[in-house]
Length: 413
Image: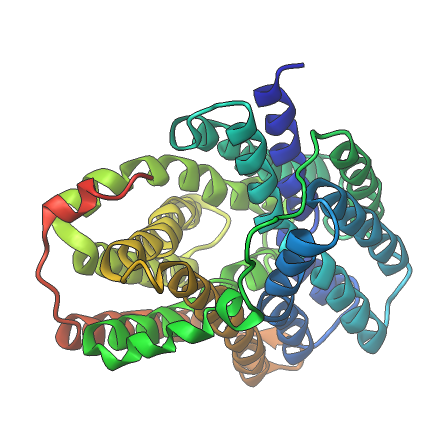
C-alpha cells in the first residue's frame, strides 16, 4: 500500500472507534441503564476532563520516551481493554470510572494520530497542507460508518457497541505498530505548561484576545450537549412513534450532523475571507441556537421530522465555524512566540473546560425538567437555544474586530 493509503486507513479507524459508541451512549445510559440526567451529564463531562489532563502528557511521552506510532498503538490496545470491561458494567459508579479511564487513553490519540500522519508525510516529502486534509476527512467518514453499523446491527441500546469498539480498538492498535517509525524528538521539547497553553495566558492582557478566549470557553459549553442528549431525546418518542425512522434509526439521522461537517468545512475559507472572524463566530452561535431550537420543535413525523433534519444540517456550520475558524483566528492574531501555546489554550478552554462544564450542567438542567421519568424536552432544548442566542447577542456587542481579508491569505489551512 502507498503511504497515503496507509494513513487514510489509520485516520479512518481513529475516529471509527469513537463513532461506534459516542452518539448512541446517551440513549443507552438513559434507556437501558436508566441513569439520571445528572449521571449521564457527568459521564459526558469526562471527555472534557480527559481533554484537559492527557494530551500534553502523552505529547511529552511521544517526544521523549516512546515513538509516536507505538504509543498510539499501545493507547488503543489499552482502550480496547477498558471497552471490553465496560460492556459488563451496569451501575453508575463503575461505568463512570471505566469510561473515564477509556477516555484518558483515547482522547490524546486524536492529536497523536495527526502528529503521526504529519511526520510520516514530511518524511516522504509530501506537502502536508495539500495532502493531509483529504486523508483526514476519512476520519469523519469512519465516524459516520461506525454509527451506521451500530444502528443497522441494532446495538444502540445494547452493550455490544462497547465490545464492537473494543475489537476495533485492538485492531487499530496493532495496525498502528505497522506504521513507519516516528522517532522521539531530539530537539528541545515544550514544557507541560507550554503544551497546555498556560503560558499563553499573557494574551489576556490584550482585551480583544481576552474576550475571544472567554467566549470560546462559553461556546465550548455547548459542544457536547447534542452528543450527550440527541440519542436519548429521539428515544423518548418510542411510545408515540415506535415505527418512525427517527426512532428506529436514530444514529443514521444524527449522522447527518457529521455529514454536514464535511460540507461546511469546505466553505470556511470563503466565509472567513468574505466576512471575517466576528461574523463567522456569530454565524456559529446562531447555528447553535437553531440546532437546539429545531430540536425543541421537532418530532419524528411530518414537518417535525423536517425540523430534526434541518437541525442536523446546521450542526456543520455550528461546529466547524467555531472550532476551525477559531483556531485560524488564533493563528493569525497571536505572536509567533505564543502561537503554539495559544492553540493549546484554545483547545483547553473549549474541548476541555467548556466541554466539562457543558456535560455537567446539561445533566442538571435535564433532571430539573424531568418529572416521574418524563422529560420536558421542548423546554430543555429551548433553554440550550436561549443560552446560545444570548451568547451571540453579547458577543456581537462586546467583541470589537476590524476584518482584514488579507490576513487570511497568510495562513495555510
